Image (cartoon, rainbow, N blue to C red; front, side, top):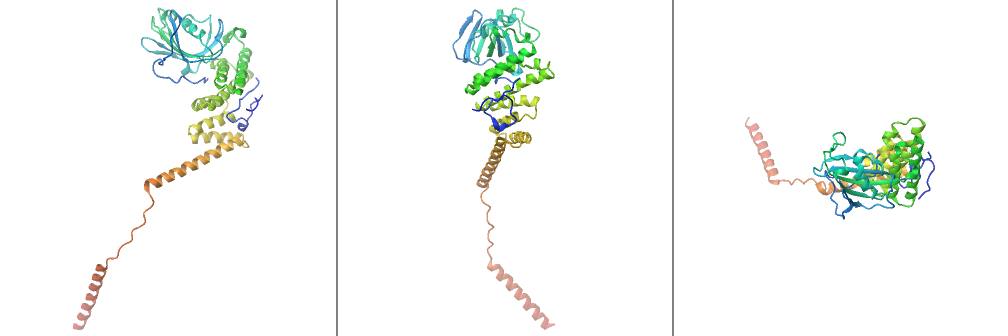
Length: 365
């Protein structure tokens, strides 16, 4: 594993898909695999957290659980239990939620109880009674929840900050938010170097959560540059993790997020090309590699990938050629025409009789 760079290298070959990107200074961890119209089916044991809250673990987490006043970052899907109507999905919206335990909104009380029992990276199914949800009246704005509706949450705790951060994300200054994100990015880099890819991605997700769209839209000038110097490397490092985990579609999404801000980013083009090539999207991969080569013409890794694509195309052509040869068979040789001697003799006799007839007629005349 190469050492962490202190500035982003423009050479894709220096890091390929394996190195992390660092700079001094949302597309988050993939959606759950179970993505039907209703809540997922879970076979794990039911844990009673409260009279009105139960939990079933879908995926184990790691580390400690958050304490009171911790700032938690999570994704969730929410359904009304009786009708199975999904009324909120932060994975789909690519918008992680910030939840300060002990300071949550009233309708989030049951969700907060569940989250407080979870570890970073844990995914769980929560059943929350209406008393700790949207209550007797429900909600007729957004989200739209009927009165007295029990709720089912599928939620994942991305990670959390303890109270030592001092304040909630929304109360931080621009410099404080960028600094908090940068610390998460550095923690992710350390985990990446230890090959702890899932844990590294959680740290990158936390950093990206500090740099949400609502925050980025407010920035311009040097503050926007400072934020992108943290945010974009997190997306690129997420892509590197996802490629190693063979989650190529998600890696493409991470690289595309960077290319929205910086369309000529060589690392983003290179890693997206790698992911596309692994998915068999050779034309799109070649397009990414050629564009990357335009800005890094001497890069050996880009040249190698283009050579591999050319070899792949040649192999596919030969395979198709052999396949079609087997289907249609070799070109048949033309059949030789057999001479019919009887017809030839008959034609010769007719010609002979005709000449004799003309000769006799001439003598008569």
